[in-house]
Length: 481
Image (cartoon, rainbow, N blue to C red):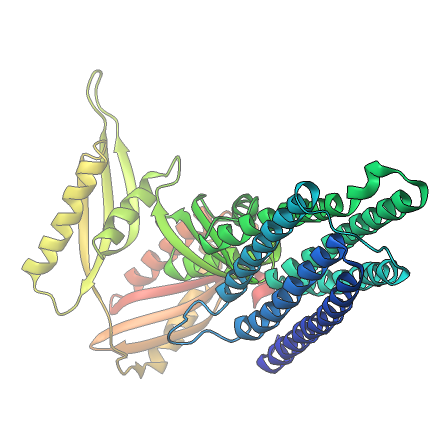
């Protein structure tokens, strides 16, 4: 996705989130005004408690609107993880306001039940306002929940949760008003206290939702790992081929953003470029599993189970910054009761600016470490070569190249598996004569057999052309020509 497309999607998300939050503010203001007027005119504590509840909903909606605007700001020098925590903080403030409202409603309800009865007038306006409240809360709750799920906004989700529970609390108030109405019409004295009891019911609902919301906001502020997210991340990472394992996963949420920090183990002999590719694949897998997330991957080199002798030697050499190639191992059988001899042959490349003493000391350190970690090795023969850094000029030797090409043209007679030799070149580089060619062989041959053939061909050619310092043979199947 291009930067311009990403920018447009972000702008659209901000516009939609702010729009629905502003509509919620307007709806809350309308409801609190209507409920307050009807509550004062009827004397219903249930309606007044709903008015107080809606008043706090108005404040909560306003806080949500502000938090959505602030949390969408990009990260800056002072807030390097973004402003997402502002959503969690605003939800925490909403929880405190709701609990204060519940305390007032509960105190007033108990006062009316036991100390100072208040006459309630269950008018048609009271029932109408509560019915309107239920309809408005239902639709705005659904709209908020849709946008919250679409963009992962905890502030909008908290707002939606408020208004969805308002539907139930308003229904409780209507039942309280019906109880008072029946008490007046039918003389059922037990129902005279239905209104303060309904208010207590509203308070209980609000306390319940406040505690749920409060736990979630505190969890977010304390960086509590979201339930099940760690297992999701670990499963996604383990699905990437080439890893040895997932050693640690840490997750947290800030507003609508998820942050993931995980440590993976990779084979210690894998090249750095491959390790970086694995890291990118893990990041992509995690995002595919949990949605857009900020993922940081730390890689740990590890020895895989059953690591072979050659990889172990290469790992030891890499640890000492020594490049090794042409690595081979030979085991010489011993007599009865004697330990067999395991010999390592390796070529080591060192900086061409080193002295013999310095190069030998480096190779000696590696040999001692191999003996320490691999006690089965009894002898190491190290050939020291220079590791080139500069591109040097070369001169084409065309006449020698033609002679070499004619010689190689006859090679298939001696090596039937060799189909042909072509692209022969000979160059003089820093006083050395270097040759190269391409050799076509049957593509189904085992690579070990191909290696043996090229070594035999190289030895035969160097015997015939002793002026050559080296012959590099590029092998390929027929279809690659």
